[in-house]
Length: 266
Image 1 (tube, rainbow, N blue to C red):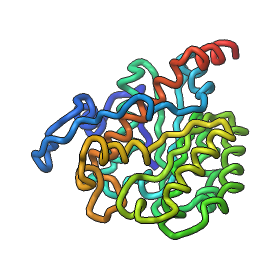
Image 2: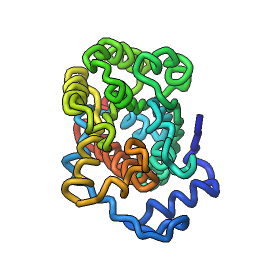
Image 3: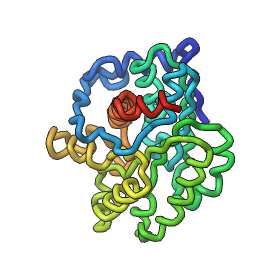
């Protein structure tokens, strides 16, 4: 579990991450290469659901706890260090978006897990942390293992109900756009299923698949620019750009007039 208290002083690794994310294109010390800018259209960053609980805590200037649960791309497989995984990069982004706001970002990713595995540890990994927001990354391992996505629908709804009963907002995160994922014929169905489920359940959706697809198709980036050699996991730049986009998406969601009004009314 990784915990970043953004109300406190930045650690050495956190300060380094701030430097990396402060500029769209940077030269990484380990390679000396200049990384491409992280430019993702705002329409891909609209979450769809509301983050009323987070907005309420922001309005009151109360500490916010975020739990990121998922599999290896949450745990940070492919990253050069723990500081480079997406939850820790997101902690940096949120500090930039809300400089005076304390956040705790807790990484509860475990390599290889699917939805049933995550549900078995929900009580300790998620609910016990008393989250205000849960980022739930799901779908990739089911897809890679050729498991039917619709078989996971009831389990996902069970998880969402438990999160909402705990008083937290939710953002689902769909699979990554990477060679091993898109090689699966059911990949588009998985992405569509998660999108439809998020609408039915009125929860936020971070469209990682479409954002990464744009890096490849529209921006012309080869997979090697944002994934490692295994053709599945993201590299440091991929995690950093994902966190940058997610930070923007969260900030825009909580600052929307509708969400702000609902938060103020509570």
